[in-house]
Image 1 (cartoon, rainbow over the protein chains, first blue to last red):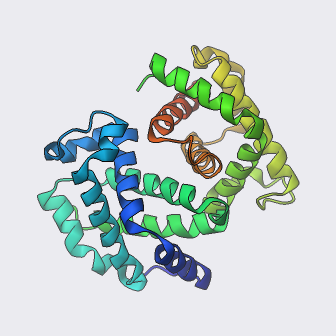
Image 2 (image 1 turned 90 degrees about the vertical axis):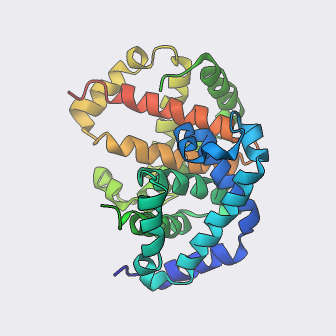
Amino acid sequence: MVEWTDFERATIQSIFSKMDYDDVGPAALSRCLVVYPWTQRYFGNFGNLYNATVTAGNPMVAAHGKTVLRGLDRAVKNLDDIKATYAELSVLHSEKLHVDPDNFRLLADCLTIVVAARMGADFTADVQGAFQKFLAVVVSSLGRQYH
Amino acid sequence: MSLTAKDKSVVKAFWGKISGKADVVGAEALGRMLTAYPQTKTYFSHWADLSPGSAPVKKHGGVIMGAIGNAVGVIDDLVGGLSALSDLHAFELRVDPGNFKILSHNILVTLAIHFPADFTPEVHIAVDKFLAALSAALADKYR
């Protein structure tokens, strides 16, 4: 089981309680699709993704970005059992969506960068450590049911 | 994933904007790496103080960003331009090259914090590609 320090718990709760999911979700996903263009392979039916401006303005990207962030919220609310919380989602990403789990890490890195830009100096090294540990657990849990 | 002409011009333009703060960015990126990726501290056991903002971290962060700035100047031939630094990392420092990616990530996070408006997705991809090409050039002599 993952051990969270009091600082880590408080930091993760604080970041997400202050976050505008509807801003951060779309920003993170569209950044991922631009910075790591091969991730577009999973969004063939999303229409135009051919440059950064178009991707940022794409309503399907925005909607899906919000979906992803709301999914993350479930982990925030179940820090002590993220593995079980995401078991079904892991199966979905493996069996139905066929997403290479390396991509979870790419999206997590883009999310870190978007959150860092929004928080500025408040995103200290210790806060970054806590946030990245949380995302690492999420990424690991999402990949866990692959076989 | 080679650097296109557009990548190079985006990197040069962005580096022009940030060069005044390069030392600060380098020091902060190094401090973030040592904190968020504690395994990287194993390379700095000879420093008295590994906390972000400490004197050795600030100094070394400046050294690293200075070298990256020089790499921007030799962006058309990174392997040739970084040959001596590659020798250093391969034969003396023997830093596991996986760590280049970790430091690169922390540089990107620091850039996003200090230049939120300028670090657009287009700049992000160009700088990410540049740091990856730089890391490969740095690892060139390893084996």
